[in-house]
Image 1: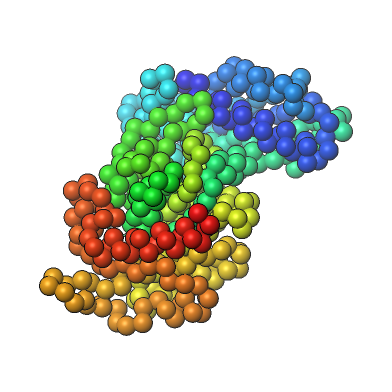
Image 2: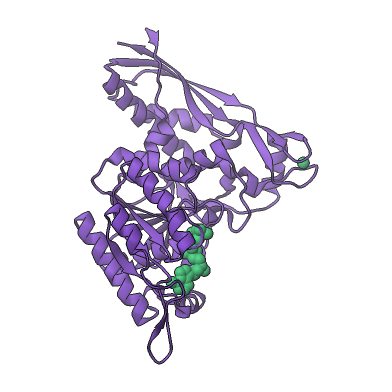
Length: 148
Length: 270
Ligand SMILES: Nc1ncnc2c1ncn2[C@@H]1O[C@H](COP(=O)(O)OP(=O)(O)OP(=O)(O)O)[C@@H](O)[C@H]1O
Ligand SMILES: [Mg+2]
Ligand SMILES: [Zn+2]
C-alpha cells in the first residue's frame, strides 16, 4: 500500500477532534484510540507520522495515538462459508480494478473503500456475491481521553 | 483526565467538510426509477460548465450507476494524499463508484450501503466548485438518507433539490412521496423538471404519450415551479452513443436545458 489514504484519514481525524475539543470546552486531548479494519491495509507508521505532523498547535498536541487493528471476517449468506482477509487479498491481488496512486503504483479500491467488497470479491466456496463483511472494514474513534 | 463520551464520527464530518467546497449543492432525485434523473443531472452539469461554472457531479447510485455511461467516462481513478481525485470529463469533475469498480454488480445493504456513500463523500478531493450536482438513486432509501444527513449540515443556503418526474400518472404518484419526504426534512425544492413531456415529430408537431396537464398538478400541490420540460428525444441516445454534446443534441433539448440552468442559477443566487 502506498501512503494515500493514511494522510486524508489522519487529517479528517485531527480536524474533527480539534473541533470537537473546541465545542466541548476540552483544553487537551491526551489519548485517542482508533480501531481500523484489516481490509483498509492502513500503514500505521505513515498514519502516525501524518497524525504527528498535523497536531501541532491543536488540543491534540502531544497526545498518544493508539491504533487497534480489527480482523476481517466474511460470511456467505448463500452457503454459510466463512473466510478471512488472506482470502480476500488473494482475490483482489489476482485481478480486478485498480486505483492509480500519485506515485504511479496500483492499488485495489477495496483498501480505500472496504464497502466495495461485494463488487470485488466472491465467496470462495460457492461464488456468490451475497456475503456480509462482519467486521474489519471500518474506521472509528473508540475512546478519547481528555483534560478539561 | 477522563474518558470523553460522544467522540465524533469523523468520516461523516469529513464528508460534510468536503461537501462545503462547493458553493451550491444540488440534489437531483425523483423517488421513481428510470424517469431521467441521471440524464438531467448530466445535462445540468454540462450546461453549467458552458456557463463558465466550476462543476462537480457525484453519483450516489451505488447499484445502478449510470452517469459514467451518459458522459462516456471511465477509470482508472487517481488517488493521492488528499484522497480520491474526481475524473475530469467534459469539464465536469465526476465521482462515481462505477469509476472505481467498473460494471461489477455491487450488492450492498443497510450499514454497508450507508457507509459507502459517506466514505465516497469523505474521500473525494473536490476542487473548489460553484456547483456540485448529486445524482440520487430511485426510491427513498439508505443512499439518499445518508447523503441528506451529510448535506443538511450546510443549512438552507447553497443547498437545494430538483425533482424529476414524467407526466405519467404512476410516476407522479411515486414522485409525490419524495416531494413529501423533502418537505418533511425541510429541504428546499428548487422545482420540478418534467421529462418525457412530449415526443417531437419529424416535420413538426408533437405527440404527448402521457396526455395533457403534465406535472402541473404536483407543482401546484407543493407550491413549486416547473423549471423545464424535456421532450422524449431519440437524439439523446444518439448523442450519447456518438460521444457528442448531449445537452445540445437537439433544439428542443437545448431549449429545455437553458430553461433549467436559468431556473437553477436564479434560485441559487448565482
Ligand atoms: N428525455 C429523454 N429523451 C431520450 N432518452 C431519455 C430521456 N430521458 C431519459 N432517457 C434515457 O432513458 C434512460 C433512463 O434515464 P436515466 O438513467 O437518466 O433515468 P434515472 O431516473 O436516472 O434511472 P434510475 O432510476 O435507474 O437511476 C437512459 O438511457 C436515458 O438516456
Ligand atoms: Mg440514475
Ligand atoms: Zn458461499
